[in-house]
Image (cartoon, rainbow, N blue to C red; front, side, top):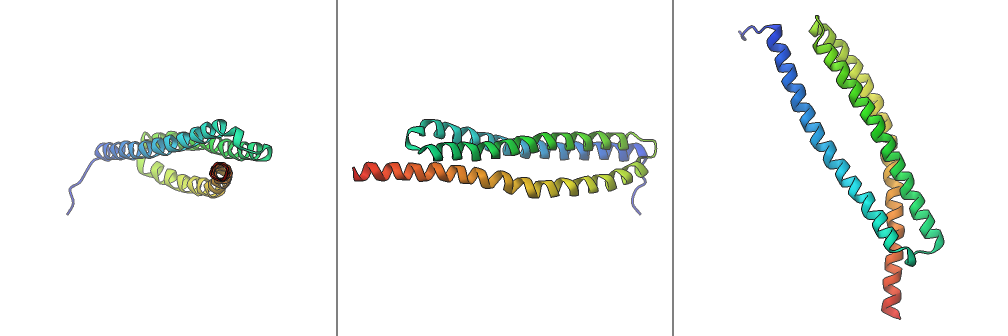
Length: 154
């Protein structure tokens, strides 16, 4: 028979689990944001340094596509911050509730519904952010290749 634990011990376990989950999420989220931030920064650095090799339509379309990608990414990050803050506050309320188990059950159900909405939004935002970003980068790659080809021929 398993040892009997008190509600206080359960609260401590839940608190520790929350801390571990939070640390894991923070690390992965920070890494993703760093990589994406560097990617956007690198694009605009290459874009501004190679403007002279871009035709006017390539110049404007690559900047526009990347701007669309960046704005969607920033918008989703704002939404994600709201979403995670709300889940965190709701979880804290549940853990500090007099009826911890009942409150955690209600929280679990509400969080599952909220996560489903979050995933539906992410399924739309991910390609809507990625596709224009890749298209913008391909415009730069094509212009760079064309410039190298001209140097080689000329």
